[in-house]
Image 1: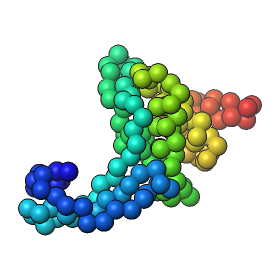
Image 2: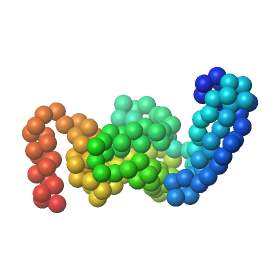
Image 3: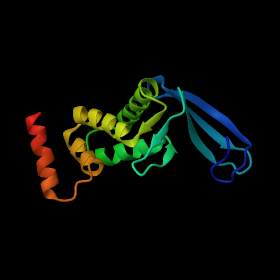
Length: 150
């Protein structure tokens, strides 16, 4: 593992422990070159996923991008970081096991919307406002009206 500070490949694992309810391993590492300490996570990856963007580009699935978007929606909501990690892991596992290797960004967004709708209604509306590209207040009004009907 390369040191994020000095880029040396001479690093050593100091401590390992299960994380995310056993879904990953957290490793505390030390760089032998500069002495810096850092943490890495090791997770099982069932298969490589490719995301087909709305503009036609194909990019590798990025777990961190998914986690960031969920964190933004959940900002200042009563959901802790462990729950966010479990949500991200659950969505990733579902995408890896159910769908094709090439996913659309729309499929990923739908999975996030399903989870957030059950978890936190405010986060659901926040995520939807970006995902559905709300432009003004009437878009929010129409979306909230559709929630009342379902």
